[in-house]
Amino acid sequence: MTNFFGIPRTHLYYVGLALMLIALPLSKFLMSVSQFGLVAVWLLDKDILHKWRRFFRNRTAMLLVSIYLLYVVGLFWTTDFDYALKDLRTKLPLLALPVIISTSPRVSRSLFYWLMLLFIAANVVGTFFSMHELLTKEITEIRKISLFMSHIRFSLNICVAIFAGLYLVIGVRFFKLWVRVVIFAAVVWLAIFLVILESVTGIVILLITMAVLALIFVFTSRSRILKYSILTALFAAVLVLFFYIRALYLEYIPDEPFIHPGLEQTTKLGNPYYHDSTLRGAENGQWVGQYVQMTELRNSWQQRSSIPFDSLDAGGNHVRFTLIRYLTSKGLRKDAEGVAALTDADIRYIEKGYATVYQPVETSFTNRIRTIIWEVMLYKYSGYLSGHSVAQRIEFWRAGFHIIHNNFWLGTGTGDIRQAFQIAYQELNSQLEPQYRWRTHNQYFSVLATLGIFGLLWFLFALIWPGKLRGMYTDYFYLVFFCILTLSMLTEDTIENQAGATFFAFFMSFLLLARSHKDHFFKIQS
Image 1: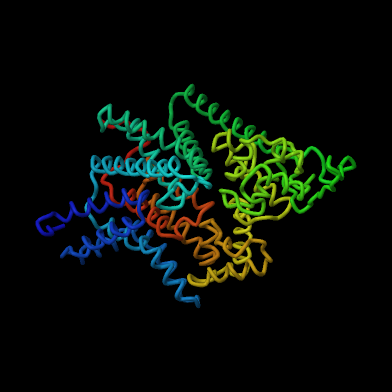
Image 2: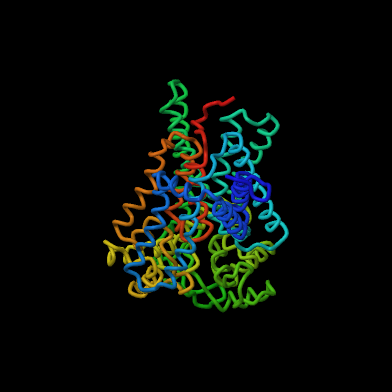
């Protein structure tokens, strides 16, 4: 690369990489700025024809770009070109970044470590912004503390940062001891923040990736004692997690069927109970829809709270439903006697939107697990979906399967997928409210529905084979990222928005094409 106003273009390129690593967890706007900067630096090089020749000789880069070209090919059998062009604009990083990075100067080992340290720092800064939001404002939904992107996208960046930090602490002695201590503290904090964020996706991906690394260590270690110790620890961890979740699940199983001979019909005040079979979710082993006396609830609530019974709580849910769930979780009936048994603190919790007695006192992770169990139970017993992320995913997948069944070979085409989902929800008579009728939240299903089975097979090939071509499945950083990426695609449409497409395209290109070295699995470097 030549100079640009006296500044070596190589330096400008490295600045562009640094800006991108800062932007990934912090700013969609800066993502765009850094990409425009990288494109500009690339285009202003007078030897651009040589770059194109280098690109076409790089099979890895061409495979990565082919993912974008799949969606271009999908234009041939689409009808909604407005949406198709919008989708192609969103996915432009899949085209631009592999071309730019594969034809630009390589990043040295030392620069790579500094860039990854910068990425870790950017994630930590992002968590500080989130904590400021949490501590200074009334937050009704914890995921809203992720200010710059969806909480799931943020959690994926955090997972990459955690594993990068672990390697910079354990795998290399590049940084001074005090710097490694700071990095380790950052890693611990980022892991804690994932729990605060209640990102089950991030936590599960973190744990599975750790398990994969542990198994690799087991199979490559020569110490039998170490092998058996790690395997035992992994097995014990799985058992503990299983029985922990099972114990929480069993708390939701009612002791008796919804209708049983001992079901009382009137309150202590003589008013008839309404046993609502449409509310067949359960809390703490009690049916939510049993023993409801709405008039007594209304009158008793208005005596205890200034928030109207028919209004919304701070979490945006109907007060009456939050009250009913909270009473059920305390083992109280939904009548005047039940409301009278609530403490003043209970009333404040209900006003804030806490639907169970557990929410104010248990860890955020446990609360999130309880929420997932509640959503699944509610869907199982009543079919209710809207506003519940886990249950909604079941409906997303159902709609996705419906589209795939009707468009198995070629898919809907790049532009028609949005309309196909709306039609699918209508044909399935989905209970999802219109504002929740989203796409599959599974990248593999999304590709299959959009581009058909042949498109999916090529997508998987272009996803998996580049690492094989470059021999990078023995590289720590690439292996970690590949695990995080492919796992995230099971529950998210990872490349269907700007943040996800940039996350995918940048790290695939950066880790496969930009480096002049490999970082083997915890091989100590001097």
